[in-house]
Amino acid sequence: MTTVDFARYVRPGDTVLWGQACAEPRTLTEQLMAQRARIGGFRCFLGVPTSDTVRPEHADHVRFVSYTGSGANRSLDRAGVLDVLPCHYSAFPRLITSGVLPVDVVLLSLPAPDSVGRHSLGLAEEYLPAAIDTARTVIAEVSEAVPWTHGSRTLTAADLDVVIHTSRSPTCPNRDEPDLLQRRIAKTVAGLVEDGSTLQVGIGALPEAVLAELSGHRHLGVHSGLINDRVADLMAAGVVTNARKTLDRGRAVAGALIGSDRLFTFAHRNPAIRLADTRYTHAHATLAAQQRFVAINTAIEVDLTGQTNTEVARGRYVGAVGGAADFLRGAAASPGGLPIVALPAARIVATLSGPVSTARADAGVIVTEFGVADLRGRSLRERYERLLAIVHPDRQAALETSLMG
Image (cartoon, rainbow, N blue to C red; front, side, top):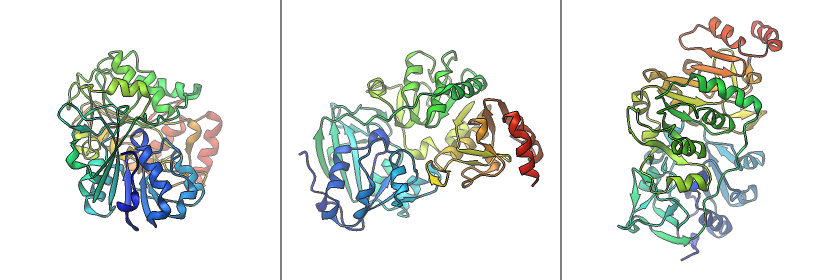
């Protein structure tokens, strides 16, 4: 079977959800969009896209909702057809299982089954187990090109209502190479990371630049929302061994694999990599229990009190609330942990131009190309002083004036 008659399985008013990024089952999503008029009005919940399967013209019969405006979702936002769900990433499984965010049909990208007929969830677990457990219909695209990965969940034929077989490879995201400024910031961040730390890194060129600067470190661990090519390279080089993790010793843990064929080949049947449910990867108790847990994220803006905007730039929704607050809070509670937000100094502002995505109460260590501002336990006046010290000297007076005004 290579084609699904979606009108048999998707009803008007339904919500359809699929794996995000590299875990998108593109044959299924392409067929769904092509058949949208026959189905009637329905809704799709979108994650981070690495393809252009969903386009603004599809909104003639489909309502799109997503927690992020990144990638191809930006064109949906510009066209006014993206409904944004601004909530913490850790909330998604609970929203799904409670029915607040109902999911009627789930589309999955799965690897071929193992010798006893089990499919792993391939390139992502995240909130998919919650959706699988509550959906009326589960439809899978099975491909030999998808890696079989170790995780907390497997599926058999009995768990799947419809299966198609393809030979399609996962869609790989475009990678932006870090520029000189980002590499300079990354070098400072890497200098804060102690050997034996467990890392979480966000999406983007700057977090990837930090990973590239860690090649001289030893016995690092990974517990993150994602594992990318850089993490795989550090594991292959013996830098990331996960040998000193408090939990999941010997294994890098993440919700998803987002990268290239190099990563997928490395992860295939590799017991040193474990995918997990968001209810584990983002749980405060899990993160706080990891000693020396270092959360490394970036932001669109940080104001002079430590508030961050990770959602809106120049009036457009381009980011997400995401998991930053979850990881920053976990790192703050971890013995020896570091909650880091790294960004160019030009993005430190007197007043945010967008929403407060992470409260100033959760501010930790801010890093720019001009240095490090540790805001933990600091008063507002002390925060102003420390943040002004890591912006360009030419901007300090103007920021102070804005602050006083």
